[in-house]
Image 1 (cartoon, rainbow, N blue to C red):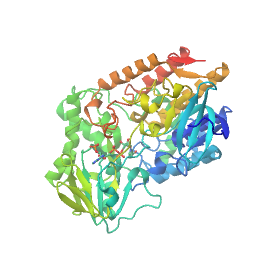
Image 2 (image 1 turned 180 degrees about the vertical axis):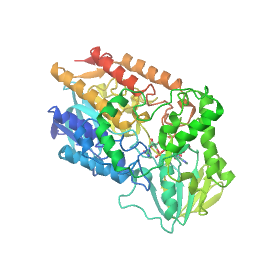
Image 3 (image 1 turned 90 degrees about the vertical axis):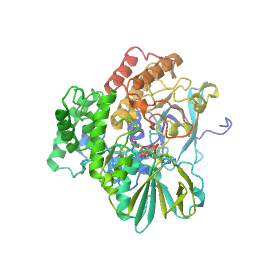
Image 4 (image 1 turned 45 degrees about the vertical axis):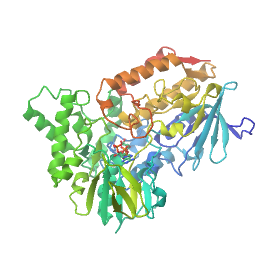
Length: 536
Ligand code: NAP
């Protein structure tokens, strides 16, 4: 960044991103009288939901839970229509919130932040965008999302492909018509699992290229009965308060019993009962599924059996039944007719676990010497999760320290909120916080409220600067790692660990210690006068 260029505008705070985090943060900052500018790369609010418009895109947190909880008025004024809201409905909800809170006037759309640099003499951040903006602000708040930096893998030959190709995380707004086409889908995570059944409905021929099979549970999505909706509106505020005091931060009831202490018939009956409810309630059937290998195996066996019962060709069923990671250690998927889709005669599963896609040709893809000829390729290949969106911005803290250099061996944060060497910079749902392991809207509200209280504290005490102390950061990173190592999570190659991105350091990024525990720690830090932070 050239320090000689003229600064155009000055704000109290800059927020990067207008997804659910940026929207709420803007509301909070403005409520407290701060001048704020939000920069958003998309043309609308909604964040990840703005970009992920692929067929079947749907939230896998129940819609009654996937909403803000800070305003009863907002809750009462919005009516969800399905158990799991589809992407267009979530976008309508985001638009509703933006309208109710009059957010758009402070959001600059179609603008990507490219650089942010801290000036120690003025305690200000200077932020630059791809539209030529150059603004300063005392606080810079990264609401950049955990799953927003989509990733197309480097497969040689993509440039030569004659057909069209799309990434699920950057789907064309006008939609894609696959009618009569031969289509390749690469990737079988949540995005692949959701889109494959719908692409199969249109395509003449569908090839699914699977590197790792995933565990998927039936969503059992359905329209919501009006009396259920009303019930939720009535009880939402109390229920949200209650779940915020739990470690799962979800309405899903955990059966606080070991899977190993019940007899096999009872366990089978209980699994079946929860399976029939649909959704993630299945994975909380017992309290030790995610930290005891035997409990996990019993749970996984039940799901593998369900896959075998659904998929008619035993060889295909074997390929689809995951055996290389404990269930739940890669993000679980929820689906509608995913496994059933492989019974369709025009759908072929191509196992690329040991024979990666060699290259893309003008007419298709080559695997194990065989060319699969297709008209369209869908990359459901995921994201540079949790750190990608931050590191794509050239962020420089004290003494010009680059975040890319600081995080070369993996992300280091204090509480997932702040970074030593980067004063007055905050992250919402940053690495080292519960974020993607809980209902992210609850995580967003908790972080934004903490940040707002912190800024209030600085202003009330005439302080200009807050910075995480290196030793507090070291202790936090150690704690996050120890928590992860006490679970089965590190046994899977997952995006939680960055293993989906070649060359990315293998570090377990989210905090598995539980939402309520984490919230308590954040409150204690404040109660002890912002312990672990230096203020001045
Ligand atoms: P993902 O879970 O990372 O899945 C990406 C898939 O692409 C994996 O199957 C991966 O295989 C495969 N892949 C990546 N690079 C590849 C390559 N070079 N060659 C072949 N295969 C490759 O990404 P996602 O499905 O987009 O989901 C990411 C997260 O977003 C989810 O876990 C979830 O948290 C969130 N999400 C939520 C919803 C929802 O609310 N319903 C929907 C979509 C996404 P490997 O497993 O072997 O790496």
